[in-house]
Image (cartoon, rainbow, N blue to C red; front, side):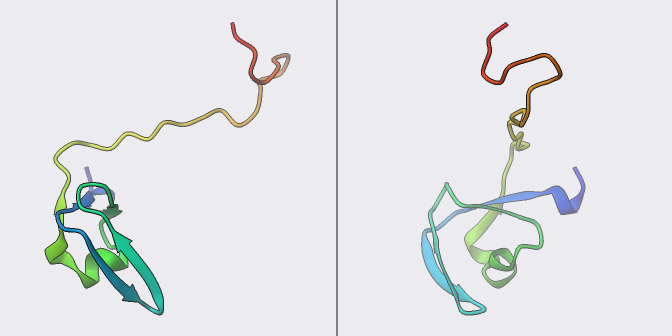
Length: 72
């Protein structure tokens, strides 16, 4: 995994403001990627995730001849 793909999870709940925007961070729930402003401003509140993150991808449109939502 390259450095830019590394994901961090909050190890503490906290609130902060960055560039005028308020953030509420939840311990064990909030995740950010390497280089995110939240991580840069508050590195002490995040730890690297041990597992790789896999995001589910939904097909946006039906393939030719298919109807969306139709089961095979």
